[in-house]
Length: 130
Image 1 (cartoon, rainbow, N blue to C red):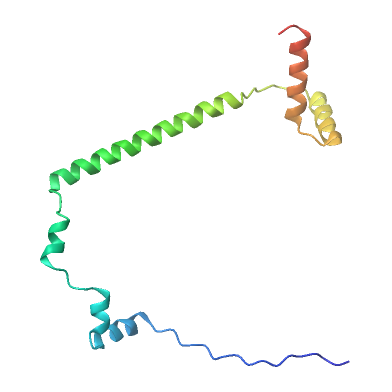
Image 2: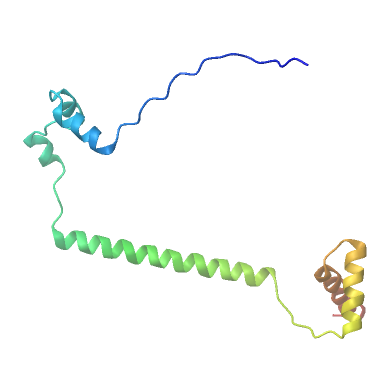
């Protein structure tokens, strides 16, 4: 009994630098990396995007929050209406033997008990003209 083995070499894992080492490397560099990461901004670039006054920013954030809350409320109401239109739940007290027969019928026919009950209710209502 021989064993088929394939020999292959694995490269050694690189040591992951720690967070402190990364900061030391960045600060001890010659500055070329720092210039590429955060270029200095000119006075012209600062004037292109003026900062809004504090009062106006607060007003905008309050308006945006109110709009988002209104949107959430409308979406929740829409979901509720959709659920109301889809299903109506009815609690029906059943006798033990009726429940056992219903359970057995559902198991033997591989369908859910609610499907049987819906079909029975629908048949009864159609037979009586509703």
